[in-house]
Amino acid sequence: MYMYDAIEKLRNQAALLQEAADYISQNCQDDEEVDIDDILRQIAEEKQRRFEELEERSMQNAWQQDVIDMYRRER
Image 1 (cartoon, rainbow, N blue to C red):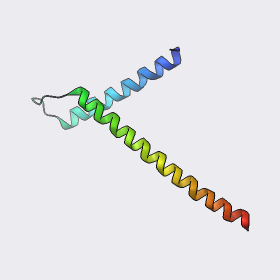
Image 2 (spheres, one colour):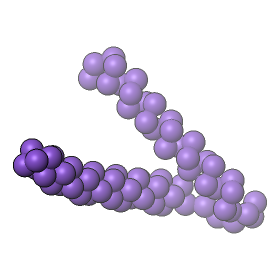
Image 3 (cartoon, rainbow, N blue to C red):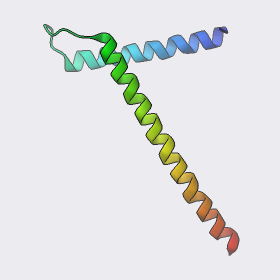
């Protein structure tokens, strides 16, 4: 793995861990048992779901833009 890739991977992991820490501090009690792996999995799944939604919305916007461009060319 190249240095840039390793650094980027570590930054992504650090961001995910920070997000999990923020979630735990805001949503869990001091005496509550916490499954960190489960929280990390939920966060990753939510990020994936949001990415897929954005990707789908982007494709819809691209299709609409194609229609707009087609009408403009016809004028």
